[in-house]
Image 1 (cartoon, rainbow, N blue to C red):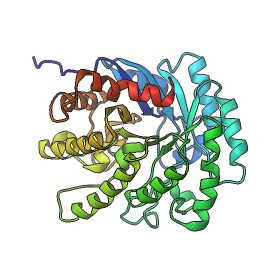
Image 2 (image 1 turned 90 degrees about the vertical axis):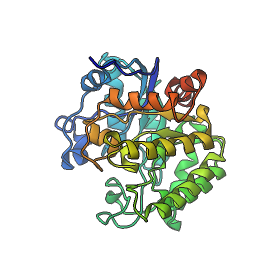
Image 3 (image 1 turned 30 degrees about the horizontal axis):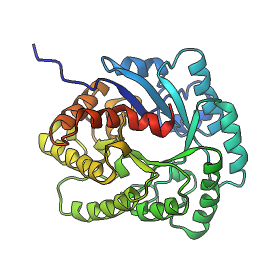
Length: 329
């Protein structure tokens, strides 16, 4: 019988999702994309042998962020989401009513709302072979590099500080430079870079070098800002197939090591991004591999003890304490 893999002693999972498009109108767009229901009970079952003591629910493309936040708060109150201690809600920060919506979100999830995510990955027209997210298809704007759109977005971004809200930054690598400039202008807004900065589909070809140059330049600028942290998650988007290929795994571990060197363990957090399946959670469907949540954390633990060379104290930070500190849970 194979020996059970070593797993982190304590996990605070700072990024996962619930959604039930079949039941809630606020998830109609997600349902139109073919997403099946994913319940809190399924998340708890997916944790398996992992000691997940706390977690953070991150918005899942709702049509109405306030309604989604209220629903997640109701799940927590009903005892259906026992690990959830914080909510990251959705608000279009470029909208004219952003201030009112932020206040409505806080009221919808009292004691839980810690931050906002508004997905802004724009890398060209949606549908081409680029990193533009399906959420951005709704408006087709680059909120970081288009002058008019960026000005509106920045007005909303500036509202977060006085409300004690953080921002989950999800953007394309080509936008990282502009994102760093935005963050530098607003040092009171705590920011976490989602999904390791989303370098996309590194496959060992000649094109990887240019992709990595852009990514490295951008993450270095963000790392220079003390209010910015980073989530090590959805790594199969960076290198599809890494969970089934030792050479690709080594590339991913190397990228994680670069981020740890830039940010330091106290500003890095491993996250599951768990929802639906291994392919969706680890790779945003960039590969067909189906690792379990336990598989992912076993890899992370192996890296910490091996190529990442993290001490026991540093491992406590990347698996739990960084997330606890950032989300104040």
